[in-house]
Image 1 (tube, helix red, strand yellow):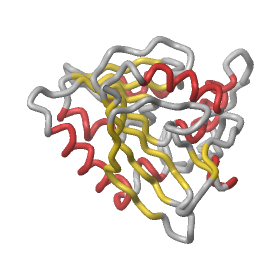
Image 2 (cartoon, one colour):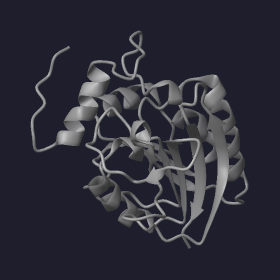
Image 3 (cartoon, helix red, strand yellow):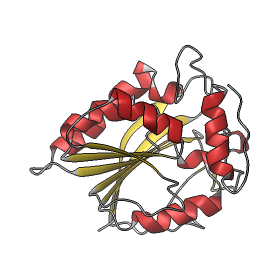
Image 4 (tube, one colour):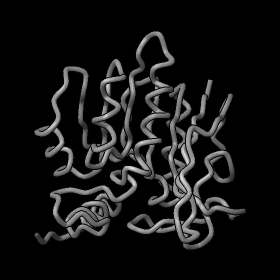
Length: 219
């Protein structure tokens, strides 16, 4: 499959290309969001912790999943929510997800989460999305997160001390190779939160850092 990637949607074009060319692997799949969304040793404990959080509420939460990808994660969280809104920037991926997954309380939308207005919800899920984006885009997203009570953020980070929030060009790569990672509480983002707690941390082999999931309560 070959496509032309043009402005004015550079991030959209890059993400389309990643799935188009299977740059995150999964050549046997039509769409594949990478090992971080599929490897059992990574996703099983993550799902256990997030589901446990969702089940602590007497009234089920409305969840907005920003960067839902191939929906291998989201499909396992949907049963524990009042409403699940899954968003991705890749239109063909969203159309594929609509055909595969059907629940009364499940919606899919193709949006650019840094530019477009986001749906109302109780809880945001951002799983290994920001690590691929530039600081300018993350800043635009961060301003919107303060409208949601809960933010469940997962990022690939270095194991030891690192310089937070070095800027990158949006794309396949992440800040880890520069000994950096996203920290929304630090400059230039300064997300205002009431509480924070680590839901899960998975140490990757060969000193390749960790995948950390943090729950932020903003108000």
